[in-house]
Length: 75
Length: 368
Image (cartoon, rainbow over all chains, first blue to last red; front, side, top):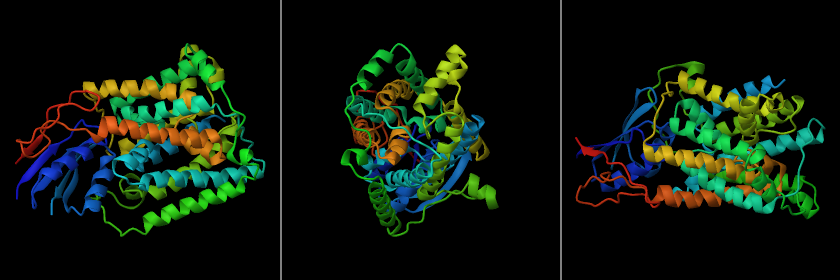
């Protein structure tokens, strides 16, 4: 049960999602991944990916103008 | 009358930004995740517009023109444009609305795109553009070649798209995580809530239909278009000749206004400067977009969304070429993308460059 952060600020879409997928593959069951991102498209793409994969989202919020954070758990 | 272009463009820019309607993303998803939700939304726009066009043409409100197919230009230009939009991180409209969100990489792509589009249509690259687009084959529309009326194609398209929509809507419903609401009522709906891709597509389809009479009444026989208007904008800035300042120029200026208003009022505007790699890639992507879209006779909007609704060969062949180009670029720039250190286990070696040899930034995955 560890928490990892993936800072993708400055990365344009679709790279935050691509990197989140890679990172998620490395995590163990029960681990959480905090993804910080600032490309607008990912506000749609990352929740859609989490829903499709069945990853629970425990936190999703704005951290400022055009910047967001989302926490996804590996079941 | 050309002011209706500014208004419609602003509306479209607003809808594109709020709806996250990214055609590049729609095409890319087909190869990256095998997901066709957004491609289906794009097809919904074509189908709705095709119905509207048929009605407007039959009632004599508009008289769209079709020209012989410049086959080589459409295929080569389509492949270049499809590849370039992945480099630039957005197609023509995507680049406009991301510029309105404050993405400096999109500003670079936009300048490159509008610049080469002007060079191809009016400037030093005109001989190349005219030469390739002069090689035509005697075919305009698909129904014309087949010697049939247009309506069987329209029915086939509408039924096919309806089946695709049903396929997606019948999937088990997944609940998407949403941002905590800060507003209520209409402001929540317009500035905060997630718009379903199909809902956005219906609105864009209606805007695309409205573009035809509005543009025609302002002296420009056409629907939504981005490439020639962008070239005209550059030419107007460079020559001050009023003939360049038409409804289309107002439309693309409106895109910037509308997407800025949408982003600013929803807390999604911020000037974001890309790193050197993305800056170079965006600029090159923009430069190639202007060349490709000019050769193909239009971008993902003018060709893949508007010409397709007229059932021209140019529209559908360029649509296919865009997809092939996007698929190739997705392999080069995205599928193999790794940033060093994005794996949780530091013992796992990560590649340090993209497939095209671009070095990658150090990263970022940290345990807390």
